[in-house]
Length: 93
Image (cartoon, rainbow, N blue to C red; front, side, top):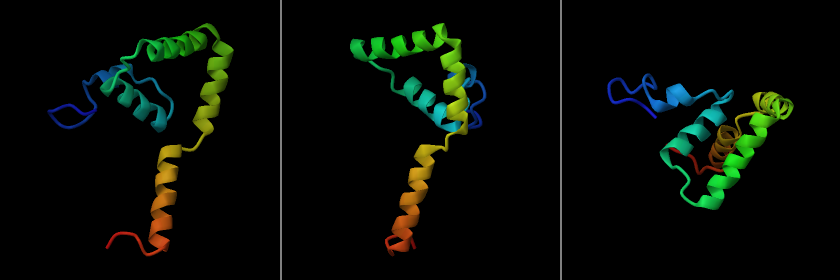
């Protein structure tokens, strides 16, 4: 999510809401803002998970610490696929 002035995140909804601890979390939040849930069961499931994290600070802290130490999985998979394709001669120019 970027603003139309200088294409930065400055002044966007994402800038104000993003308290995530990882790049993967930030991208997930941006996706959730851009493509919100519309099905009630999915909304209730997400709200239930959020409620559990709010009510259980030990779980929230533990989960946050684990995620901070986790690799950025989406980028890691992309990098692995790119290297695999390159090594097989299917890469770019």
